[in-house]
Amino acid sequence: MKIGVNVPNYGEDASPGSLQDWARRLEELGYHHLLLSDHVAVTPEVHRLFATPFYDPFTVLAWLAGTTRRIGLGTTVTILPYRHPVQVARLVANIDQLSGGRFVFGAAAGWAAGEFAALGVPFERRGARSDEYLRLIKACWAEEEVTFRGEFVSVEGLRTGPLPVQRPGPPVWVGGHSAGAMRRAVRHGDAWHPTSVTADWLVGYGLPSLRDAADRLGLPVPALVPRIKLRITGRPLGADRVLGEGSLGQIREDLDLLDSLGAATVVLDPTFLGEPRTADLAKRDLETLETVAAELVDLEHQRLRRG
Image 1: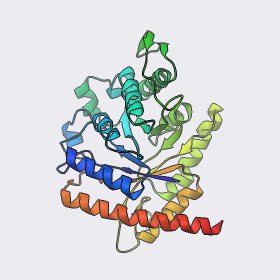
Image 2 (image 1 turned 90 degrees about the horizontal axis):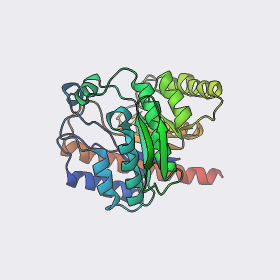
Image 3 (image 1 turned 45 degrees about the horizontal axis):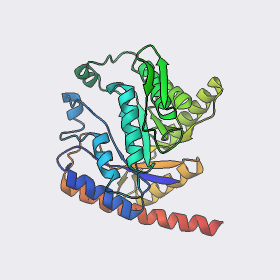
Image 4 (image 1 turned 60 degrees about the horizontal axis):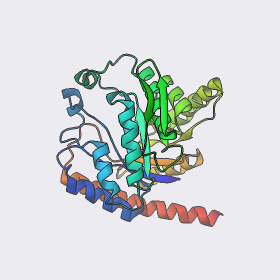
């Protein structure tokens, strides 16, 4: 099971220097992925949760591709309707080339109605638009020349190079908890990427619903790649806590559970909606990630001893 980190690319502490520090530290600690979130128009509803400055994920990841060597780079998650799918396909393919094949494409349909309005994108039927955009994006990665006719976009004889290093394209992690999001993950994703959920919800509802969607569509069940919160508390929390929050022992149990469920990757998310992102908070988050990295090494040693 690989471990990634959702790095805050927004707020008071966000700067080229701080983003590079995060990348350097995570690579040193042995984390497998560094992922960034996505907003284009920081409207009041977005700003209450993700304060400016908000650095564009693709710009930052292209830059970090040249300043890192091993760590995977990606989005958690790109909002599909915000950009033309051909532009997204090219951005991802270019960064995959620049990074030597290290890109992961996390994607979802979005939630911020005001941001859709500011960008002139219809909020209604964003799910259907996202499905079609994913189809075209993957076609652009797979072939040197693409002809595509859809409801929302059509292209004729489109030249797509450079193609991504990863063939037929970078892994696609589809986010969202709705029935439509799960169908999208089954149809178009390599993995389902739920965020901030409880163990009971994931085991009792989320995974059974995903399997049911796959059965109905006659397609394989995509991998599980959850994004969980990361907050270590002095005392254990109650049973209704979300995965990743609680005592160090509880977080260790969460990682064991996710490993037993077959999670291919777990993304640790130290950010909390509306929490001011200060330099002191970033320092504490990196110290927490250092503690968790040591725990992960210990867990791996235990697995090896068990055989």
